[in-house]
Image 1: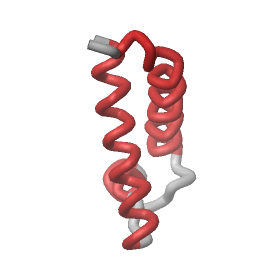
Image 2: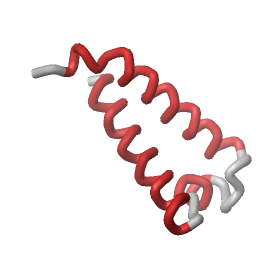
Image 3: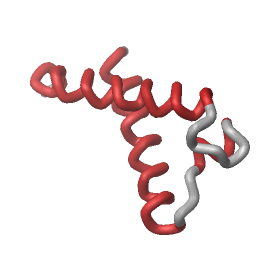
Amino acid sequence: MMNKIGWWLLVIGGLNWGLVGFAKWDLVANLLGAGDPTATLPRVIYAIVGLAAVWTLFTMGSMKK
């Protein structure tokens, strides 16, 4: 279950970074922080996505089917 959550958080984070890179628009900051990427709630979301990346990195071997 944690692997699936981590995977989905990575997808969401990747899409957000794609929007930042291509359109200079931060979806997370705009939805949760009124456009301010330094607001508290977007920073919490960024931290959770970062933890999901670390989790997924260390559990990639167990994701084989």
